[in-house]
Image (cartoon, rainbow, N blue to C red; front, side, top):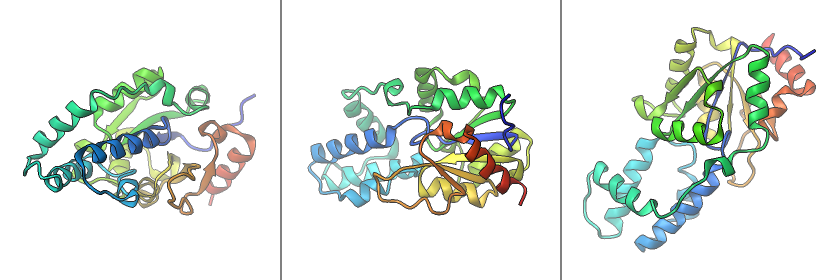
Length: 231
């Protein structure tokens, strides 16, 4: 018999949790700034991990200006970037982390409600979930691009909790980056982090760190989460 999961709902981040897109995006952005002919440090590129779409949009405007391209509006900068980016295809199914299908199916079979709260645009979220074949598991999808405040502000999680109709102490979230972990903690959620050691950021603020997303279903993880739930 399956061990009972100690939370009524799990809220997933997407990039860095469901798909290994952050490493892919870092590679793409390095190619882009090289193509523009501007000097952007690795620290600046890494600083974009987990940030909102609006932050990236403003960064694009800055990069085009630094390259001497002119003072583009955000829509024009995005259009030009998308045109350049269209030559680099991305197969999100290939980028899906091991254990993700098992995690969402296993949680659903235990009666746990699933939501997704990502800083990415809704169109990108739908594309990723469809490519990974897991759209049907998520009853609620929230895009931070549609909110005024972005992670590390807790607004995206507070909004998701409102849509779920559940209090924070009956839910947990799965994150990876500092902005995401911070947002989850500020919203009052128990935060699980998928272990990430490539980008140099700390996950110490998370309540539990797992190697794979489906590790949340392991007996030891369930016991640890249960202890946290009843504090």
